[in-house]
Image 1 (spheres, rainbow, N blue to C red):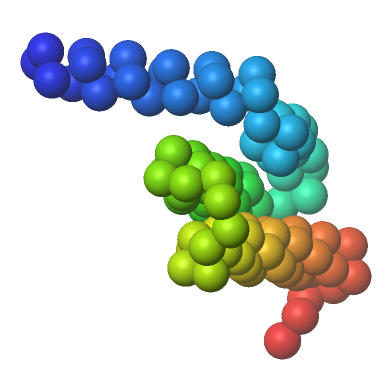
Image 2: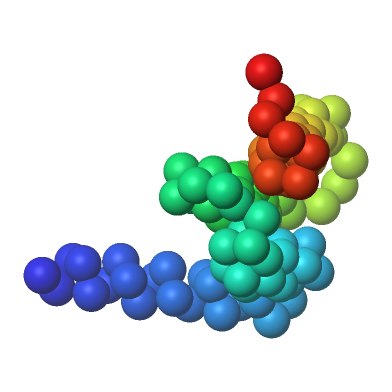
Length: 119
């Protein structure tokens, strides 16, 4: 039980720090909060609602991991290094792919809800 409390404390500390200092995470957090009421209106099924909200949670997970990679790289060295650049670029690409995924889910759900069924 103590281990679970410690893990929760560490996670809460990271959430607070990212919410205070990372602009991308702050924007995604606002999108997530807005997705609860907007997703309820847009989604035509519970499954659709879960996909809408879940796609933004997945985006935030990728953003957190990208921030972790960047922090680890910066702790290692702030000088230019091609391998560090690749690690950071890959993290950025992962975030971009998660954004594309989330946008696709929202676009498809909106089209299905307001444009009729998509086959």
